[in-house]
Length: 250
Image (cartoon, rainbow, N blue to C red):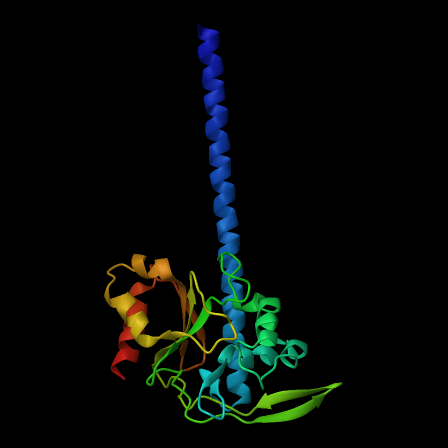
């Protein structure tokens, strides 16, 4: 009887030890994925800062318009040269809409920097979206875009001279830049993002940030020194509320 109890105790101990090790390993994997996602998000934000430097302090427009005034391409397509993907950029067909057959195939092939590795989304989709609205850093563009074509090896590469009319934060200000969605059905080339009203609705219906966390993993903001801040919906909820309220009242 005692021997049987001893074996049961040993088996139970081994089981509990295995369970603890599994939990530790899973927590470590989760932390690595979080860091990987933060790295992707920071890289996109850094590329936006490079774009600002090239465009005299202006972000790209929220989307490009064709000659008929229809949204045709996302701001994300304009970041490719600043993500050091000149080769990829010159193969994107700006003369065609984002959802043409060629551009759809392109989006599925080159989406890695616009998706968080820990989220399960379709290959062409993105987790990183701008917070759009007339009083945000991403107002709707007013005019269609023309491209200057530059020779790059054997290819003519389109270089649009476009920038958002919105002003970057002034002294003491902090503004919404982009957010990372947990789940997204938005292709990274599509001229679609998150309207400010949707973010306001999520924040105002929340008290602790837990509900916001179900939809948004991180909120990226920018201050007057052009420093990027990655805010967590739970740990930084009050700060997110303040920045969202400021954008809402402008």
